[in-house]
Image (tube, rainbow, N blue to C red; front, side, top):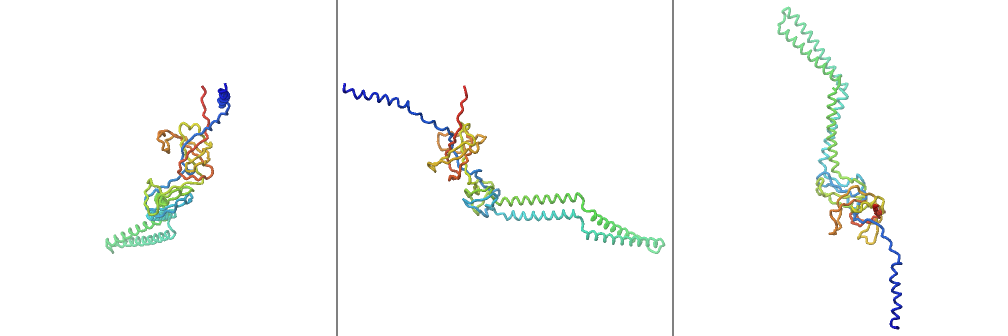
Length: 339
């Protein structure tokens, strides 16, 4: 009997241990959240600066890390030819404008007075020639001069009359001013010259590369002396506003119903182990699309559709642009349909 005593004492203890899990509190349910991969980018997105003209870079006025403002000149393509073309176009505009104003203003008073004097002289010559022709006609009737001399006097009278009429027409033209169609033609010529000037100005402006936003030069890809090709895939520089950062996350199509603007989000990166960067969902795209980035996991579905979600990060976290991060969004609870 003594040999079984310890065994008898252990039986109640084993029974008590077997009942212990039934009385322990259940672990708290894990907070529902949506996981996604994302990339850090400047708020307002990164701007890629690609020249619109081909040519050699005469000046590059920025370095990586420089702060720039919207409209600031950051580079210049050689543009002596464009400047010469603009100067010629501006001279043509000045010429066409002067011609139009001359037509609009009419003849000068001095020109009118000169034309009137010419008409007066022509009139006097016409009268003198007419009187001489009449005198010779009378003499010719008496047989004192030949018929040829009479005809010469009549021809001279006709010539002076024609000159008088020409002078009278010139004076009338000056006094009447420009015709409506002449003014319209002058206006059209001026408009064409101004259009050519604007075209030359636009070409020159394209050779002056300016920053489209306030921000920081994230990367400079080309230097002075290099040749750029218009709309080539190699940009001049990349600019972004680093005062605020955001994360562009790819939310899987199975989770899009649990994400809304305003939800809290947490961002983590292996480069900043143990650190959490807080933010909120600022925008949820309205269009599904292909995955923007790959995790490198062979098991990842490459043909899965995603919805882009922007996470506005709080403060100014030390995350470089382009860094791959993990995003966890406090999700909406899953609603189940009633049977």
